Figure 1: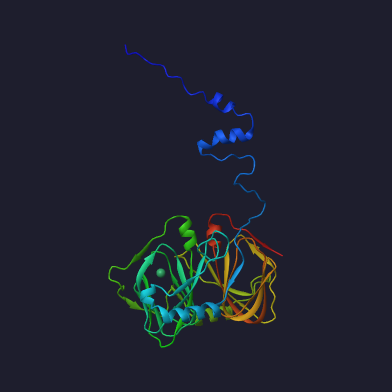
Figure 2: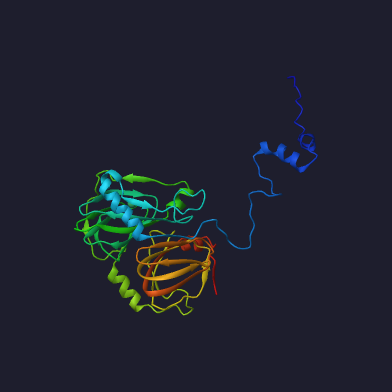
Length: 328
Ligand SMILES: [Fe+2]
């Protein structure tokens, strides 16, 4: 029969009983890599959603001038992308207009191209200023001009070509901060550098042309409750994290106040006005972009007929059954 050496089990009770105060116990607990649920831990409890992110506006005129200056100093080939990515100035944030949303301005000179690539993040472009540009998404080549919204869902090869003769500028919109938070970003160049064009198409689910958007807005009626004006949804089943809308608001119109726990951005496709985000006044005009982080009161006062493209994480919140909306 084997000899057994009996080893005393550690006396956990005696170990923690040495603590005579909560502070002493806290020190003994630390090696366990747990966080106590008493005292002022990192847990925050609030009956309402809250976000430290700041309401913020990026100015098209300012950023475009900076990009024009960059275009004299660096080619798009050297730059990869001649882009200004937005960074919400919330302390600690390094990239992203809001917690889940990224926007950027991109300047493209005549003749410039972007080789085909694909990435995890869902992306889109709102064309502020451009003629005779083309986008190739999954082998389909389509025109991309002022007032268009073009989708490049995650995982789809895409590239662009500028065949026009004037400098072009667009707004990029992506869910990059969400993808980063999930630690799943990928980015891959196409093995042939440019994906073969299999078809040239006019109508595609990847492009909402200026004309299509205007026709649908013409047919839309104002929302009966007065929060959004005439508003259409741009269907993007391939990119279900992002909700996309375009609203048409008339001079003199004032929307009722509303708030949502969805992070929301507003890109001004035309017109002029003022918005109040939790009472903070933002004056805006063509090309400007501002963000309302979660649960901020939003209202728009329109000075000149306006068109506002909006991007939010609303579908994601709805899918998770987290979505909240409140109107006044
Ligand atoms: Fe891309």
